[in-house]
Image (cartoon, rainbow, N blue to C red; front, side, top):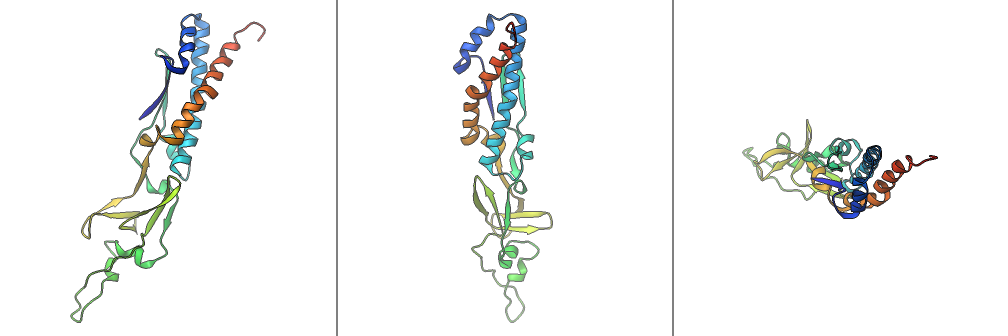
Length: 208
């Protein structure tokens, strides 16, 4: 997923017409203004993404939102790359219930199994509590059939004999063009991009 600032139509079409009539030096400053503003806008989009997704730090957001200035096409593009973020990128909570913590653990669930007189294991009673929860999208989400193993939070895919899987949260690539992130981008075109271009061009005026 990506979001793009383009001078080929839309709110910046007036700037595009002016650009075509500019001398070379002014065009270069115009491009620099677009670059400067684009980088500042990228910062605002990243801040919005972090708030939107509720990540613990900015690092996983920054690593997955590269950008590119295309001088030939006069566009500045912010990309969202990668799959779902590892669950440890979000505030994680572990259940205080010992039963919940071992219920779905492949190595420890036997502790909850009753035995008959012959020593045979019986069926495990399910617990309504999830062992692992995480703060995602501003609210707490519980992961069903989760447990904490030697390598951290995990969950069982499917039923009793399902495969162990890692836990992931939302992906930056899917969140970039939504909600707070998209609003920050759209707001920034008028508040950041246009003033940035105007400042660069104003610096060329006599007496500046």
